[in-house]
Image 1: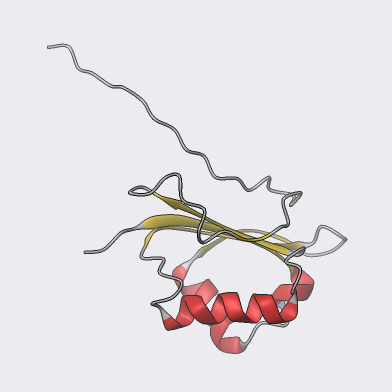
Image 2: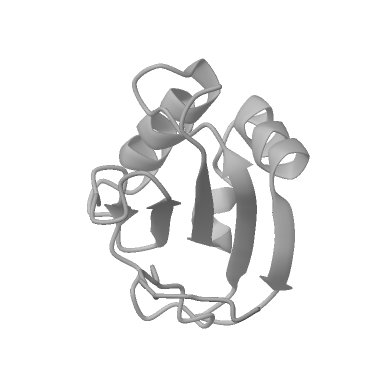
Amino acid sequence: MGTRSDVGIAIKNEVYDQLSVRTKLFLQEDFSQEDHIEEGEEGGRLFHCSGIKWYVGGDEEIGRLYKELDKIDEEGENYLILEGCYDYPESDESTAGSWWDNPWDLFKNVCVSVDYHIS
């Protein structure tokens, strides 16, 4: 079964355009492209996926994404990857990049609640 996560990726167009065809296909096939701002300084793409097994060190496609992003943008200023893991909500081990002022305000939301039902 494995641990499953929600993953959001905000990436500027100039970085996305430099990704390999294989990595672009991975993003297009495994993620929903939620938005695409085509022009301007804030131009970029927002990808989202729910319930994915997000193992950075154990998955070739995921590992390639991180390596390519690091090579294209060593400072990480033009992309942001956030993983929301149900089993490890406090973990930010897979967070990469620092495009915190992205136009979608991509953020990790951790919440805990107490629920009940009255019969």
